[in-house]
Image 1 (cartoon, one colour):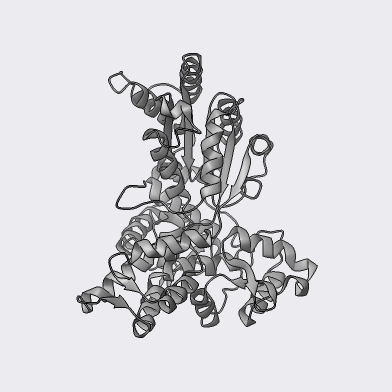
Image 2 (cartoon, rainbow, N blue to C red):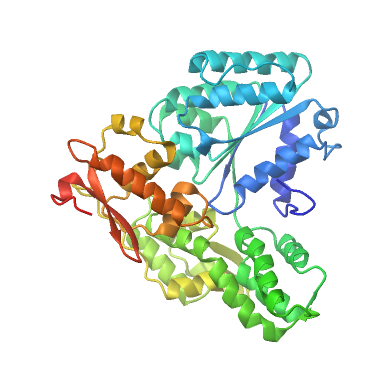
Length: 456
């Protein structure tokens, strides 16, 4: 959430549009699409903070009069998709009336919770009060097969009564192509989060080094290294703090400090670069691996002018823009496409792209859905991820980014969760498979049909 200590930067046009949407009739629906670490959660928290603190009063009189209630929910915290309705109802009830009594989350069936929520939202509308639902990581629910049609249909109905803003890593039509999801898509405007505006990036960097002067050459070089990516811009402050520990009396960031700052920013950016590295190996099914490889190899060699871009590369280029991997700007000879940061470019030049896994009968899903009922939420998410990436070497950093969605968390989380999951797998009859540890490199899930030796 944006505070005085951690202000929110950028996304001005999107913030303005979402703020104005609180006054539309019928209520609007938005899907904010962006790759991991592009600031989707920060944007939702900022919006909730704006509404709660009655900012943007000129454009949002409902918020200024205290009639707009934002409800934020991280969908990764839900054990099952059907829990969405009870969580939204109890949260809205608490925010609207903190002293009011709310039933236990275990009381009532999903249809009953949906009806309670719909009734409450409708009653608030008749009283001139509006609700806005901010559903973070909504694609986590769409990736779960059970209840998806009912979930999307009910959410479409809720969107006729209240503003719904959700976030997803992929466009909704790439996450799930079901009929119910299609109906949800038709009712929502998709907004793509990419790299942030240049003036905002400059302001963000100035905020990071406030109190200490910075030479223009250093500022320009650091901005180029961040590529205007919010994750890297945020990490600049940590790099400056590290250097100040060794040089506490520093009065100005000068050119001689730049090599160390670039070195540390490259290290702080590794979780982001690893995530993007794996994205390049797993493009949508509509983009052939050969096309993606050819495009990336061309971008590695330098800026790509639009008039030199083959038509068959355009879908892949669009996808790279959606993932905030490519920037469009004016070079010495006109507009060009480039890898957004020289730090990522250096990472790619020293790290071979992973070969996309070949799906075979052995790597097909083998886990009985009933198995998941005996697992904790994180164990289930971990097994589901391993099943989707069977026979593929997955690093600890990638598991933190993809399963935990916390790339900077301790690797001990992964080690402990895998230890518990292995114990669960050992108790399954017939066997499901084995999680193998390739020391120093990561883990590989081998389905039972691919191995007859289940010793660790």
